[in-house]
Image (cartoon, rainbow, N blue to C red; front, side):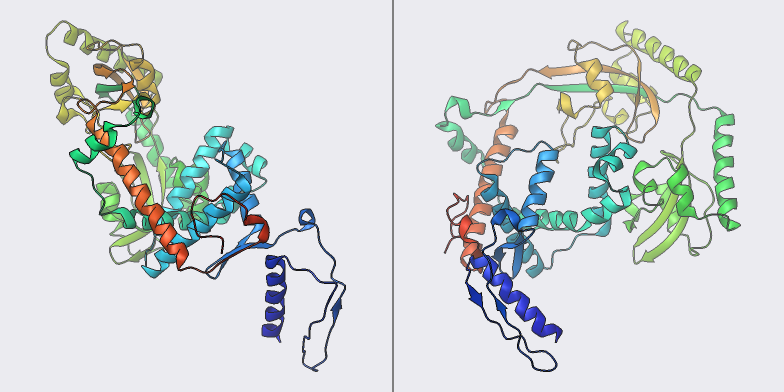
Length: 476
């Protein structure tokens, strides 16, 4: 019986898709008694009155009117503007995504839950920064963080699959210097890419001393959490949500997701991978992030899933002032040529990422490691200081929060500044190469989509057939 009803509903959906109407529709719907039911006088329903409908079918995947409206609302909330008519552009984009997803399934491409979780958390954190607080975000969206995370799961999973599929399709594409020269040789002046101002910055940091009293206080708090969980007064996950200073995992009850050893701090990984009993809590572990206690959830091969609570000892204002004074003295010694900035960074600096390179900061924001930063890619505190500096100048000491979330004090030297300019082959070959490579990859992906459309079943509502689509072949 259920299968017969589904067939009937599918028939009605097809009528909606093709836009056909009739003054009378007679349908035989056999039930267990083999009776016949008649539907007559089906009215013409205005489009504005339709709550939801199938507007496209790509392969065996439907695209709903609600899918389009959802993407439109999300884009408006994030300030995204569509090129062309959104009523045409949005369903086409959804259709293209379905082509990539179909190919990803054929090629057995997978993404891990930890990747999905990380992407969701990054998006939620951006929203929180934009709106001001978690409470305001929940009020604005009329959802809890947990509900948002659940709602976003499939969307982020599909986005990651599409991204992986696109990368696989273009992984063998490359360009030569000759390709770059030929591409830009006859390009109009106004099409030459503009390279924003770039800087090279050296940094020397010192971490303010944390008192032993503060460290003991943090350890006592972690011991108290362990004691409360062991006695059954509460759960580890509850305490993580309330007290952990890891903002990403705290929202998930301290859970990190399945992670390989290489992705974890060595001291943390050593303890996490040696846990065997989910009912027991680890000893206190010190890492560069602070102090942790850890609870095992599960192990799968060479990956482990644990919960943790992170607490960071707070530095006093007196300690910060003392460190700033010490760094200002070091800066004066460098200006007086008692030693170089590079020597000071290699011997005095606490920044392990830069001290072996004379304090020179490295930028990996575009996936390629370089010493050049656009101002937007620098940490906010450093960008604010560097903005008004001259090349070769050493700053006064200032405080900032490092990548581990700890308060540190720093002085910086502006090693080089390249003002914004039109790209040239001699000065900006990598920038121009990236432009040509991106262009070639996009052309390969465009051609792949056009070819894929030829071999995919596509059906759309009549009102979309007059659209000016980016890809040819949708309308048949």
